[in-house]
Image (cartoon, rainbow, N blue to C red; front, side, top):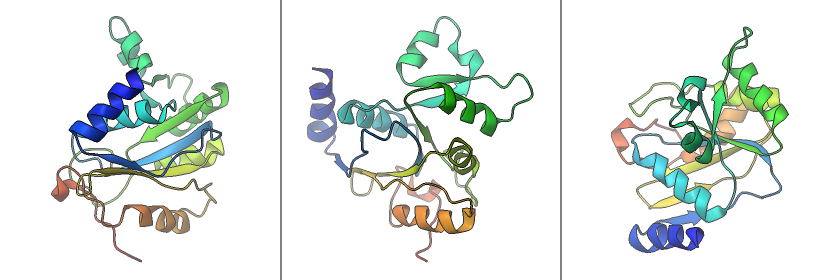
Length: 186
């Protein structure tokens, strides 16, 4: 029932579509979600998750998961990030992958909704450390589509892998286009 409601809002009212799919057999991955230019990206992710029926997750500092909001944030796919014991973020998140049976982590490499000159690379190193594929996901407001790309297992050569992954985002327009990261066609 909820899935049908999501479809009605997303497809009929909003006029969006989902292009591509994520193989449900891929239980663990890092989803490279771009461009991240507005708060509207959050509900696009919620609708995409609801329509595909796949668990999708995000991480936040553990303090967010206290009463009264902890239950809601977990319900929305949130996972508290505990960095005690001297772990950095990459190691902490890789540890989450190890203990979870299903963990599809959505990360916005821009790290903010404002214009950036460089992408953050933590998502790449998380996938590399956890030995999981990266799936590029484009929120294209210009075409009103969420485009789910092909999974790619990181090789350890970040320059080569990023040149392949970023091809997925060429021509993609965020809600606030001037805040989106610019990709050159290489």
